[in-house]
Image 1 (cartoon, rainbow, N blue to C red):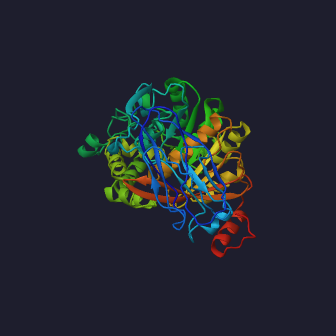
Image 2: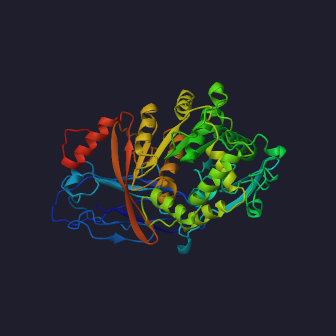
Image 3: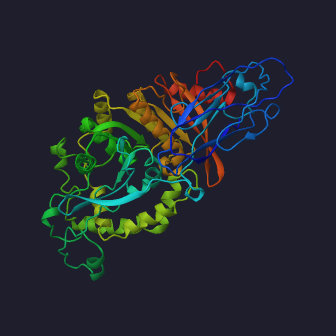
Length: 522
């Protein structure tokens, strides 16, 4: 059921868009049509707001009808066989035509009953303007320079949003969020210490071990026996990263934020929110890893921690150096990096050239191998993922869940477990999408994130994404989302899980989709 296309003419103000249909029919009975106005805001003068097309609802009833900027009206309205159609926007910048119950009569077999057309990414080649992105460094402590990127600083009254990256990547992985969401919000993305461009600028262990080759002394840092004072207690752990986030928010952003994390960044985001609820307006988890670290934490398990004499500090023990050299040679190989990206992206047509080159560039930093060793042998955090989630719930920290269904590492079952513990949290399952939905399908993640933030900022007066105003979903609903990318239409499915969703609902929904059993709830 093809509904709307989204293109546009330049605008710099709020515009009320009226949609009208042209329907011809020999049936003289009047149909009931309901329309609702929707505001579309352009945050920059050279941003583009929409013109729309409505077509192919039923080829026997409608012909394609489109004009730039608005619809021309017609007084001829025919019968839709008592079908009540509705044009609605939910809570964000997408548009829905929902035929409700009788719409099944005019839907094509196998298609979703409801299609939501959402804006694509800013198309600079077509005159659309994306937010300017700045690359910066913040000196947290001597020798600790944190790299971050920012956009949307001119949006002085807009909510601040902070993105935390997954393991092995950095702020560059959120380029599509910075360029798009920076048009509406103030947006930051940081590199964790020991990753991305937040690797040290000096060798933490300049003293060389006996027998080191000249090549290793010149090219690799952190493999010596003598540790510099600034690195004497350095270990790239989840506790260090959550401290880094706290100081960054306090000293750079200066106010509570919406915090978004993918994979490892999701764990850190939840951990940070649990420890600092006063600095968090809400947490969005993008395929968040449910655990991190293998060694016991010396604070929560002091006796057990004593069994492990080394836990990621500098210098690296000699036996660890040989192991890391061997492992690092394997995982930093360009072929290994390419294979990992192939695994985590469900849609192999996604362009990952920039991500690949930035990861490869990081692996070539002289501190990369030793930093990797410190991360891998760092102790677990003082809070487990479950403990952090419980604290967030106790402190009423809003949580939103977005998971790529085809993630080979963090399966959707992990997200469903979070949903069971925090049933009021909106859960969006995106398909097809893998471990990094924000980079694979940024159009969808940005649309959902915009809508969720607007819902919170208006205290619920704007509905959650994919829901109508005042609509409450107990179990689950599915929507087909469509957007334009590189001049072509692309579509995928998003399922929203309500507060009463359970594993049985998921099973029954699957059975219903396969066998059409209308007695089962979906």
